[in-house]
Image (tube, rainbow, N blue to C red; front, side, top):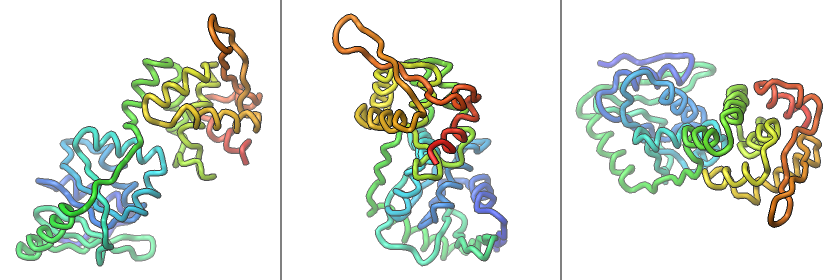
Length: 272
């Protein structure tokens, strides 16, 4: 009989499951916390990562993937063929983690979480057949966020290594990047690091649209909002043909004097 696991954190259970898996893993009906943990553990996994299938409610997936930090890393895993995501039409009785060798029911109790485990061959085979069938019937989840590796690579090649380094530093200091008051979104972050390096609005918005972060119109609207809050300023730059383009600059002394890893915190304080 496989041992039950009692851990402080879902990441411990997922780390153990990924380490012990000999084939693919299927995570069924997880919470937002469990999805975030799965992406964290899979991204940092040291070794050969087994294929992971994620079957979750569409509402939970949409809410979780609004965070650019989670969605862009999930997109990396999908791009590498290590993760696939489909939507669960009907909630499961429990959140489940299924391998070819065991079935684990994930149960929270206060600030701890348990994985109630069975490795009974008949039960495991029946559960796998049942949820494999639900997987086959499920619709793929359309994740439109670009992979973070592609974002970083194109930011360096299209805009500049210094901008990419600042972008990385800002992301490293954030717990979430969803722009709902809990963190800055990816468009705001892109504009702030562009302003710190005095990049043209045209260049950063074209890059953002090309890589799939947001449209040029979204970049323009966000620029106007940040300008109204004096977080950024613009300077007209003449060109040979057509209207002058706008060079982005930081609009507050506290931002201009900040190190890249301080940019997010200070911006958040100024927005509030």
